[in-house]
Length: 117
Image (cartoon, rainbow, N blue to C red; front, side, top):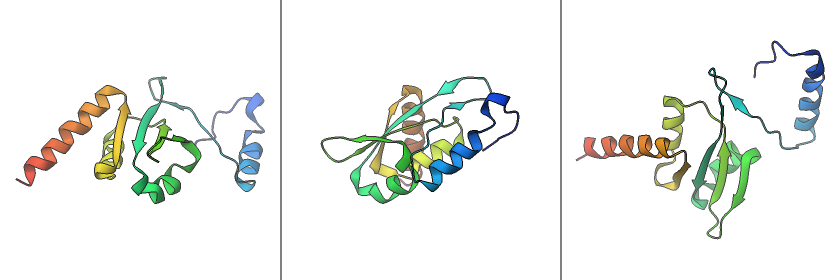
């Protein structure tokens, strides 16, 4: 986290942040890219991966659907790390939106499949 360049109004944020962690409260952040774009990413992760969801996404789990799958909204910059993280869940994850990331993941999975033919 980058705490530099905070205005006077936000000077107590660190204290509030620390208290929330110590009290085991959920803390949420909005991500703004270097282009000043606020982004959100929605994911569906199957219940078989509960251990990873609870380890990596516990603070941002929106809900579980009727099948027990986790619906997670994340704010990530779009880059190869994001694609790799999504692909690391294998068949246990589905990108719900944005659609262009679904297409990127589909193409990367296709290339991986073709490599093993």
